[in-house]
Image 1 (tube, rainbow, N blue to C red):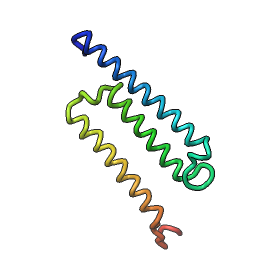
Image 2: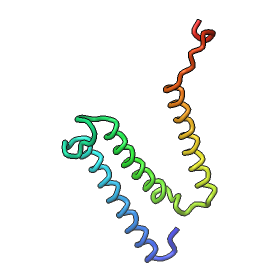
Image 3: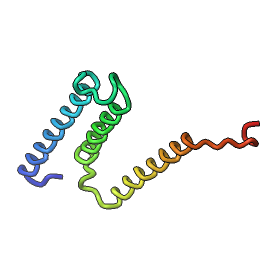
Image 4: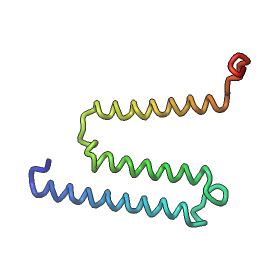
Length: 111
Protein backbone atom coordinates (compact mmCIF):
# COMPACT_ATOMS: atom_id res chain seq x y z
CA UNK A 1 0.00 0.00 0.00
CA UNK A 2 0.99 3.60 -0.44
CA UNK A 3 2.67 5.27 2.52
CA UNK A 4 2.40 8.91 1.52
CA UNK A 5 0.25 11.32 -0.43
CA UNK A 6 2.86 11.46 -3.21
CA UNK A 7 2.78 7.68 -3.62
CA UNK A 8 -1.02 7.76 -3.80
CA UNK A 9 -0.92 10.48 -6.45
CA UNK A 10 1.66 8.51 -8.44
CA UNK A 11 -0.53 5.38 -8.27
CA UNK A 12 -3.55 7.41 -9.29
CA UNK A 13 -1.67 8.77 -12.30
CA UNK A 14 -0.57 5.25 -13.27
CA UNK A 15 -4.14 3.94 -13.03
CA UNK A 16 -5.42 6.77 -15.20
CA UNK A 17 -2.72 6.15 -17.81
CA UNK A 18 -3.54 2.45 -17.91
CA UNK A 19 -7.25 3.29 -18.19
CA UNK A 20 -6.44 5.53 -21.16
CA UNK A 21 -4.36 2.78 -22.77
CA UNK A 22 -7.19 0.28 -22.28
CA UNK A 23 -9.66 2.72 -23.79
CA UNK A 24 -7.40 3.31 -26.80
CA UNK A 25 -6.96 -0.46 -27.21
CA UNK A 26 -10.73 -0.98 -27.17
CA UNK A 27 -11.31 1.75 -29.75
CA UNK A 28 -8.49 0.38 -31.90
CA UNK A 29 -10.01 -3.11 -31.77
CA UNK A 30 -13.36 -1.78 -32.92
CA UNK A 31 -11.75 0.29 -35.68
CA UNK A 32 -9.81 -2.70 -36.99
CA UNK A 33 -13.03 -4.71 -37.11
CA UNK A 34 -15.14 -1.96 -38.74
CA UNK A 35 -13.07 0.33 -40.98
CA UNK A 36 -12.04 -0.81 -44.45
CA UNK A 37 -8.66 0.97 -44.56
CA UNK A 38 -7.61 -0.90 -41.40
CA UNK A 39 -8.73 -4.19 -42.90
CA UNK A 40 -5.55 -6.21 -43.39
CA UNK A 41 -5.49 -9.40 -45.38
CA UNK A 42 -8.55 -10.29 -47.43
CA UNK A 43 -11.75 -8.27 -47.41
CA UNK A 44 -13.84 -8.88 -44.31
CA UNK A 45 -12.86 -10.59 -41.10
CA UNK A 46 -10.10 -13.11 -41.70
CA UNK A 47 -7.12 -14.72 -39.99
CA UNK A 48 -4.97 -11.57 -40.08
CA UNK A 49 -7.69 -9.48 -38.42
CA UNK A 50 -8.11 -12.15 -35.74
CA UNK A 51 -4.37 -12.14 -35.03
CA UNK A 52 -4.32 -8.34 -34.74
CA UNK A 53 -7.34 -8.43 -32.43
CA UNK A 54 -5.75 -11.10 -30.25
CA UNK A 55 -2.50 -9.11 -30.02
CA UNK A 56 -4.43 -6.05 -28.86
CA UNK A 57 -6.40 -8.17 -26.37
CA UNK A 58 -3.19 -9.75 -25.04
CA UNK A 59 -1.65 -6.33 -24.51
CA UNK A 60 -4.76 -5.15 -22.67
CA UNK A 61 -4.87 -8.28 -20.50
CA UNK A 62 -1.21 -7.85 -19.62
CA UNK A 63 -1.82 -4.25 -18.54
CA UNK A 64 -4.77 -5.29 -16.38
CA UNK A 65 -2.85 -8.15 -14.78
CA UNK A 66 0.30 -6.14 -14.15
CA UNK A 67 -1.23 -2.90 -12.89
CA UNK A 68 -4.74 -3.51 -11.59
CA UNK A 69 -4.03 -6.97 -10.19
CA UNK A 70 -0.65 -5.78 -8.84
CA UNK A 71 1.36 -8.58 -10.46
CA UNK A 72 4.17 -6.11 -11.09
CA UNK A 73 4.84 -6.14 -7.32
CA UNK A 74 4.75 -9.91 -6.84
CA UNK A 75 7.58 -12.32 -6.19
CA UNK A 76 9.35 -14.24 -8.93
CA UNK A 77 7.40 -17.45 -8.19
CA UNK A 78 4.26 -15.86 -9.60
CA UNK A 79 6.07 -15.18 -12.87
CA UNK A 80 7.34 -18.76 -13.07
CA UNK A 81 3.80 -20.05 -12.57
CA UNK A 82 2.40 -17.58 -15.10
CA UNK A 83 4.94 -18.36 -17.81
CA UNK A 84 4.65 -22.07 -17.05
CA UNK A 85 0.91 -21.84 -17.74
CA UNK A 86 1.62 -20.01 -21.00
CA UNK A 87 4.15 -22.68 -21.96
CA UNK A 88 1.66 -25.43 -21.14
CA UNK A 89 -1.03 -23.71 -23.22
CA UNK A 90 1.39 -23.33 -26.12
CA UNK A 91 2.41 -26.97 -25.98
CA UNK A 92 -1.23 -28.12 -25.90
CA UNK A 93 -2.03 -25.85 -28.85
CA UNK A 94 0.96 -27.31 -30.71
CA UNK A 95 -0.22 -30.86 -30.04
CA UNK A 96 -3.70 -29.99 -31.31
CA UNK A 97 -2.19 -28.45 -34.44
CA UNK A 98 0.01 -31.50 -34.92
CA UNK A 99 -3.00 -33.81 -34.62
CA UNK A 100 -4.84 -31.77 -37.23
CA UNK A 101 -2.07 -31.66 -39.84
CA UNK A 102 -0.93 -35.26 -39.33
CA UNK A 103 -3.85 -37.43 -38.22
CA UNK A 104 -3.35 -41.06 -37.37
CA UNK A 105 -5.21 -43.41 -39.68
CA UNK A 106 -5.01 -46.82 -38.11
CA UNK A 107 -7.09 -49.64 -39.54
CA UNK A 108 -7.70 -50.99 -36.02
CA UNK A 109 -9.00 -47.64 -34.82
CA UNK A 110 -11.55 -47.14 -37.61
CA UNK A 111 -13.40 -50.48 -37.45
